Length: 189
Image 1 (cartoon, rainbow, N blue to C red):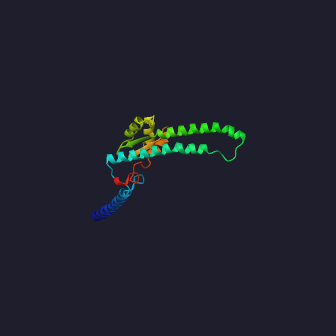
Image 2: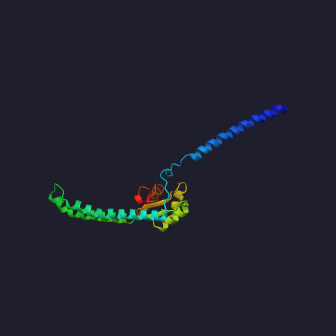
Image 3: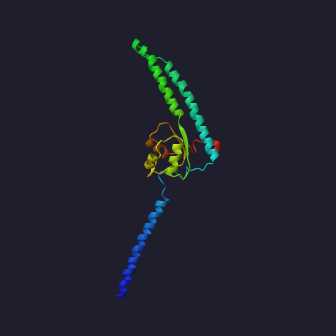
């Protein structure tokens, strides 16, 4: 009887040990698996604050230059008359040009109102909501916190256009940050 209890305990111990070993192996594989939301380790580059500030300044300058060139292109397009015109179309043309100018101006203003926000590494959802509210990106802090509760945040610089919905803000903040190795000048790499 004593031997039977011993063998039963030994068999149970071997089975439990094997099960624990399998769990450890599975856990180790999950730890070593790359996070699909995280950047690839080959793309991760550490920057100083000066390098990031310079990259943001370069990006802003590039966007401003594009905005300055955009009105010139729109004026060239408006100066070219259409191929076939009737009197009715030519009479309505000044009204259309004026509405095009208004649309272009409002679009240029909206693009000029984009806000660049830096989300520090390891920021909580509440800290991120505070930053976004202070910059005027969101109006309802609690709604943003509720929306982002199950979403992993990313750190970095993000550009937000004026008037984005919470879902659009969520999409921007979970996407890849603006400052990357490709955006920096060759001297900063």
